[in-house]
Every structure is written in structure tokens, then in C-alpha cells.
Image (cartoon, rainbow, N blue to C red; front, side, top):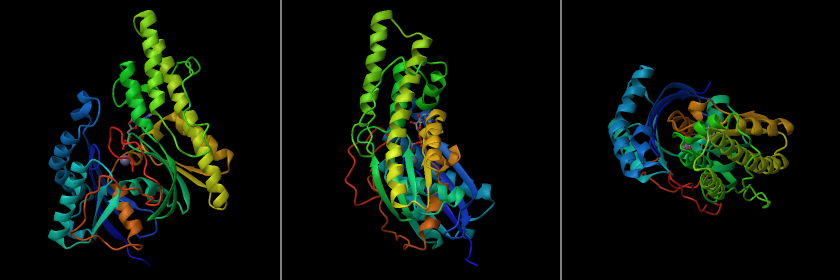
Length: 365
Ligand code: KG4
Ligand code: ZN
């Protein structure tokens, strides 16, 4: 029987500083021994977005604390770890560098192998960590920083079917919350406000649905919400709670429509090429939205496809997915040496054309 391996993972590419220990046999699902996440929401909230300099400083302060807490929580020492994995990109460069420098220090001090991991691969391999999902599967990454459809062929082999050409949907939720005077992060507050709202009152655009591809766009939708809000304020002098709810519900329905329609296109392409496998997975903070999740789940059911949505703590940024990605990839690649570099941009599918958007949380690759 193959030997179990324990990996220490580090993540610091955006606004979460995280460390985790994951144990498993390469090629099988993983066992999370500990997972520590420090979020920076309080530090950034008055700026309306992530401030890279503040993020980098906070990562530098917390990364070693997160490693110590992850070891403590798993009741392990560094000597018992078999390898070290770290997000080496894409993301905000100051944060990625904090993680990479810390991981290099740990690898140099202990002589353990070091694996630089693509953050998007971490998200995309999460269904294998939680469910052992076999390849190939269709993946929708949908968060404040990412929005893309991927075909996962292997732990190191992804092709991108399409993605956002401007903002990520989570950014649009956050912006709409700001426009309506709702608290951040915007996704959960817009979802809450949408309860009791009329999703048909505002006819917000469904961008790019006329194009026969899997690309998406959310910046025009944000502008449409701004115009609707300003029209109400001009007419009545302010927004009532019902206005807030109707805008939230109409906006949420527009996002759900666009994601479901483009997901259908991606799913049909995937099923055409791989009719025997039939797994559709989602990850990212926006996948927590009940209305959106339900639409995607129904779509999968309609096409006789298994729908896999990891628990929320593993949908959002964490280091367990980074540790697991190293475990999943290690039979397929060599470790990195001390020359491992932090990469602000690092597309998962090197053959796909670069995406245009960069957004508040950095490059989408
Ligand atoms: O994956 P995540 O934690 O971080 C990255 O962006 O990498 O996603 C956070 C994003 C935020 O923009 C937040 O507003 C959005 O996910 N979000 C939601 C919901 N919960 C979080 N969007 C819509 N509905 C939700 N319930
Ligand atoms: Zn992420």
C-alpha cells in the first residue's frame, strides 16, 4: 500500500493568511489535520477594497503565527512534516512573497522538499481533497477574485473554457452592496437584502449571452445598478428598504441567469467530450449564494451530472487546498528549489489567451 504523506501548506495571495496540515496518499482524497485562516477584512474595510501594501504587511506579521498554530492544532512538529507547499501566484505580489519567503526558510532549515503551487490549482483541486472526484471534471471558480470555467484533466493539467473579461462576480456583489449602503463583504448582505425583493422590478442586462462562448462580463451590470439607484434617488430623494431589496433581488437574478446560462454551455461542451464522467464542481465565495448554487445544482441534475460544492470554509481562500494540491501533483512533477519565484500572474491554462480583467483583488490570470 502507498505511504501516507503529511504536507504543510501556506497561503497568502490575497487577504487571508493561512496555514494547514493535510495528510494523504497521493492520488486519493486528503485528510485535513488542521487549517488556520486569519482574514484581514477589518484592516481593509474602510478602504472599500483590499489595499496591497496593508495586505502585504499583515501577511508578513501573521504567516509564521499561522504555521505555528497549524502545527499546534495538529499536535505535530515541523520534523514530522514530509513536504512544504506554498502559493507562488497568481495574486498580490507582496503577499505571495511573504508566503514564499517563509516557506523557503522552513524548507532550508529542515531540508524538506518545497512545492510552489498555483492558487487557482488549489481551488480547482478542492473537489478531489473533499470527495476524491476523478478526472476529468468541469469546474466553475467564482469568487471576489476569480471567475472561470475549467476542465480539470489532471492535477497539473487544466484547460480554460472561458472566464470573465472584466470583474469577478464577487466584486460586483461588493460594489452593489456599497451602492446600496449595505455592509461588506457585499455578497452575503445583498443575498440577505434580496429576500422579499422583486427580482423582476429592474431589467438589468445579461451581458455576453448573445455570444456563443463561455466568457462572462459583470462590469456593465454594476453600472446598470448604479443608474437604477440614481434614478430612484432623483425621483424620491432616497432608497426605501423595499427599493434596496428589489435592486438586490433583480441584480442577484441577473448574475444567477448569466452564470447558469454560461455554465450550461460549458457543461454541454464537457459532456460532449467526456460523456462517461459527469461531474460539475464549484468553488469560491460566490458559490455560497443559495440562489446561484440552486440554479447550478438544477442544471447539473437536468444533465444527469453530479454536482459537487465543497463546504464554504474550503470554497474560500485557505491553505488546506494548497497542501492538498502538492499531494495531488507530487507524482507528476519535481519539487521546486530555492529559486522558486513569486508570480503575480500565472494562468492555469498556459495555452489560453490572457484575460483582460484585473479587478480589486489582483490579476485573474
Ligand atoms: O473566495 P473568496 O472568499 O475570496 C476571493 O475572492 O478569493 O470570495 C469572496 C467573495 C466576496 O466578493 C464576497 O462578497 C463573495 O465572495 N460572497 C458572496 C456570498 N458570500 C461571499 N457572493 C454572493 N453571495 C454570497 N452569499
Ligand atoms: Zn482564491
